[in-house]
Image (cartoon, rainbow, N blue to C red; front, side):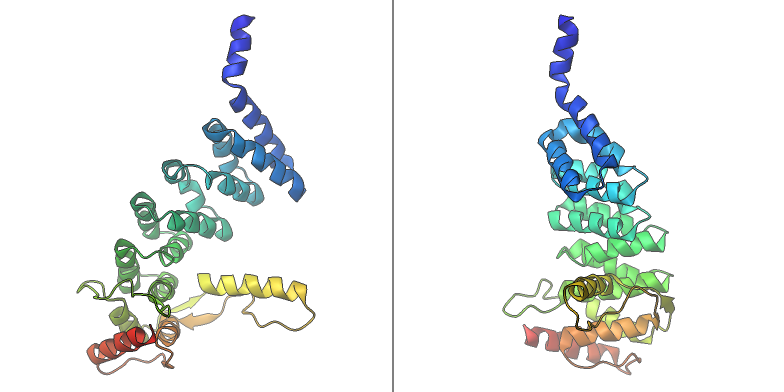
Length: 277
């Protein structure tokens, strides 16, 4: 009896976490979900077995809550347990998992995103590339450059183009994160070259989805019409995405057509980007 009581004391948080995870998986009311998430968070590392079970729950909503719980754990725990969510069939979960890693800005997290970005599944790869675009890591830029230059799927190349623009987008008064592009990874040169990439794709890129979500939220708060892309495939080419990226970077309209002198265009584009800073 004493041994059994002692075991309960020792493992009480693990026992509690399993119960709260069960309740969380069944909860449908946001207030209840918030309560069980708080309970599980309070259990610390003892809750990890229960959280791992939630990560593999068939419900996307439960997996999303598991990601919230995982995001409050130490970095090494996040990197170890987040891979299933990076490959999740639900795009919002994949992108949220990628953003969680990107915001940690640790070498291990960036390495995991880079590994995921070369996945053969283009949806998984695109979500990882979107996350890499939210970092300022040179290794992340190298992966984006490689994806734009070499990946066979047009959708992946398009996402790489958008993410490169996100990474080097000028911020007034801020120092450029990459003053001197390397010979093997000049993002602007690759975007200029991509103006001749007529690879077609049907899909919505990461930033466009963010705009959609914001537009939908605003639309719920007002009776006025709100402009948004809407969640539907739109047939485009990689060149069109590259042109949009270069327009955002320089403030100068760029047509999605090849340029006759790519070297000169690259130098002029870098000059315009630095001028906007």
